[in-house]
Image 1 (spheres, rainbow, N blue to C red):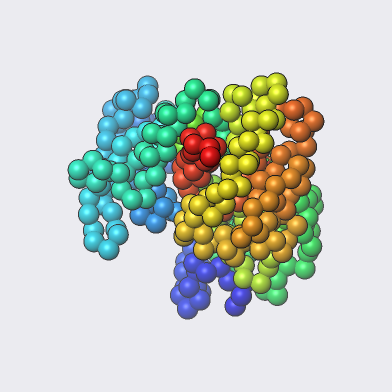
Image 2 (image 1 turned 90 degrees about the vertical axis):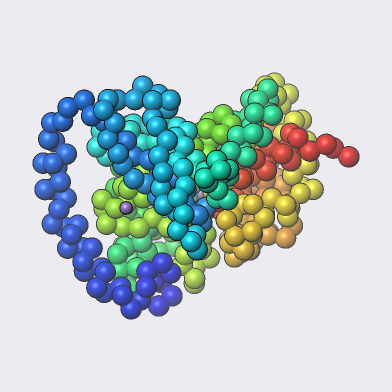
Length: 376
Ligand code: ADP
Ligand code: MN
Ligand code: MN
Ligand code: MN
Ligand code: MN
C-alpha cells in the first residue's frame, strides 16, 4: 500500500485504471486524423490558470477569429471557481506561448485570476510578485529553477516499478533501462517546451528510477514564474498522452528518502559582474537571518511539506531548522556553485524550495530579503 500514490483512491483504482488504459490505447492514433484536418483563420487559444489550492492548474479553450499577435489581442474570460462556494472569476491573460499540442497558430495563454472586484484571488500570487519585481528592476534580477518530479503509472505505483518496489539504488543522471524509467516523457516535454517558447534550459534523470528534472531560465523578474508554470502545464499534458501522472509532491513515496525539490538560482547585475562574489555573500548573509520566514513560503502548506523533505537524511538535502551554506556542496540550504566561486562572480542557488512551490512566492521573498530588507 505504501507505494500507491496518495491521489489515487485504492477502492476506485481498478475501475478507473481499466477505463483509462482502454481509452488511451484506442484513441491515440485516431486522434492524428482529426488534428490534421484543415481549418480557416481561426485560432484555438487555451487559457491556463492556477486553481484555488495554489498547486494545481486548470485550463479551457476558446476560438478567436484570427491569430493574436500579442497578449493584448487576447480578451479576458471567466471561469467558475470552486472554493467552498462556486463563484465566477475573471481570467486576465498575462503571457502567451505557442501551443505545442495543436500547433501554430494556436496559443497557450497563462492567466491571472481576479474576483468580481478585480482583486487577485488568494492563490494568485503573481500580481504581488510583479509589484516587487518592478521595485527592483534596476538590479536586473535573474532566476533559474530546477523542477523535480516523479512519474506514476495508472496503477498508482512509481512508473515502471514492480509491486514490491524498485530494487535500484540512487543514481543521478543515470543511463540505461535498468536505471531510468520514462525518458520519453522527459524528451517530449523538453521538445514541447522549446516549441512553445518556454525557456527550458536542460533536463536530467534524478536519483529515483522514475524521477526526472527539468530546468528553466535564466528568466528576468516575473517571467520566471510564468515560464515555470507553463512548463508544468505542458508536463501534465504530455503525461496525459503517455498515460502517466507527474507528481510534484515533495515526498509521494512514504518509505523512500527521496524527495522532490525545486532549487532556485538567483543573480543580480552586480553579482554577475566582475567582483560579484561579495554581493552573493552579502545576499546569503541576509538569507541566513530569515530562514524560517523563507520556509513558510517555500511550499504551499506553510512549511509542512518541506518539514518532511528537509531532514538532512539524504546527501542532497539540508536541515529544516538550521540555515547552512557552502561552496560546491549539496547538503546545504544555499550553495555557491564551484564555477561561480572560481570565477568570482555569477549566481547562487537556494536549494530549499519544494517541488510544489509557487515560484512567484519564492522569487518575491528572495528579492525582499536580498535586495529590499534594510540591513541592521
Ligand atoms: P545544479 O548543478 O544545481 O543541478 P542545474 O544545471 O540543474 O544546476 O540548473 C542551473 C540553473 O541555474 C538553471 O535553471 C539556469 O537557468 C540557472 N542559471 C544559470 N545562470 C544563472 C544566473 N546568472 N542567474 C540565475 N540563474 C542562473
Ligand atoms: Mn459549463
Ligand atoms: Mn539540477
Ligand atoms: Mn536535482
Ligand atoms: Mn540544483
